[in-house]
Amino acid sequence: MTQRPVPPKSPPLPATPASPTAPGEPIDESLLDDLSPPAFEALRWSVRMADGLSPMARAEFQAWLDAKPEHRAAFEDMAGVWDAIDDLPPAGTARLRTTVAIEKASESSALDATGDVRPPVPAPAAKRARANRPLLPHALIATLAAGLLGAGWFGWNTWQNQPIFNRHYATQRGQSLDTALPDGSQLVFDTATQADVTLYRNRREVRLPEGQAVFKVQADKSRPFHVIAGATRITVVGTKFSVRYTPSIGSKAVQVAVIEGKVRVTGASGEGHGQTVVLMPGQAVDVDDQGRPGRVDAVPTDAMAPWRGRRLSFDNTPLANVLAELGRYGESGLRVSDPVIGGLPVTASVDLDHIDGFTRSLPLVLPVRLRQRDGVTDIVAR
Image (cartoon, rainbow, N blue to C red; front, side, top):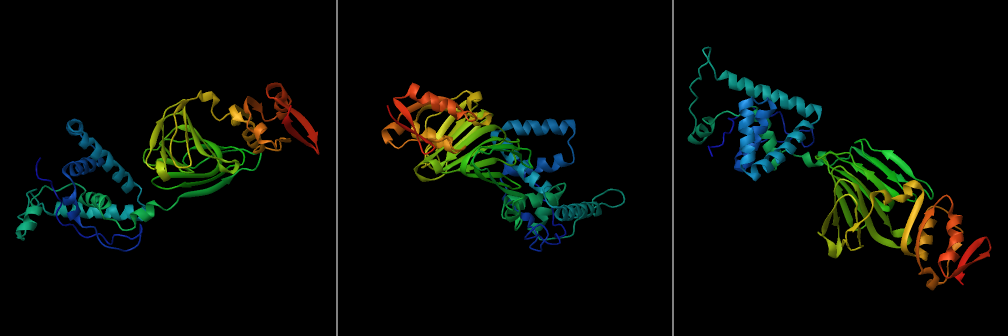
């Protein structure tokens, strides 16, 4: 590979900010020397593409991209830096454009009236070596990008981590909520659910301390979407999935089911830290309170999150757990005191708007009888 070009010294930036507009230190162009060869070439192609590529140059770029996997990876990383530059606030962008204009003017001043390059001013050997390298177009942009990759722009991370949207959502007993986020994602919260949604410039986060929800995430590769519930982190780019976490009724496992797309589920703490499973459409997994994913099960997508249709489904679920779940939506009027009766398995589909039908069916499917007392229906042994 040929020697990497590095731009000559350019007029310093007015100041490199601690925040997008605050004063700080100028970026050192020598940061370009610290880039690996693939990263430098990726940077060079990014700068050239900003001005547009000819058909011949585009073919050359594609050949370089296909030559080695690390070339493509380096270019994708650089694309993230380029997006970050595009996201600079107006003041920073204006300063950047001004500096580029100065850089171009400096380049033009090296030409005389006939277009010949003027003899360079004598300089120390090291500086002459740098000055003799081919001039990189938009050198200051490249330097800024190198600074972002390294230790460069003070306050950049702080700026990236400032929320641009933050809201707490809560549904009461028996309520549900369908809402849209500024990024275009759609969220449906079930009854008795708490969620904190925060959107940043480089990621999106939902913390779900209680309840369940269905997420239809707007695709944005530059801002992954995370859901944190219990000891579990769910990460997507753009997909549709459901998450359930209901510690208030004794269930400390996190249940994740995928309706569309692909979801990565990772144990967030404890012994299961680092354990990851990838779910595809029609798959579901439970993650315990130590962050350990269980077996991946196949579940029909139309059977996921049945609560959206005001219906609950139970499969060999202890009766006591069934009653606890019904209690999240309202008073069922049912009570069980005997732990043996409470442990009886129930398989049923319950219409939340007609719980009385479920109540009447209990003595038909379980060895129990119903006893009315003080306005409450006790479920006791037959």
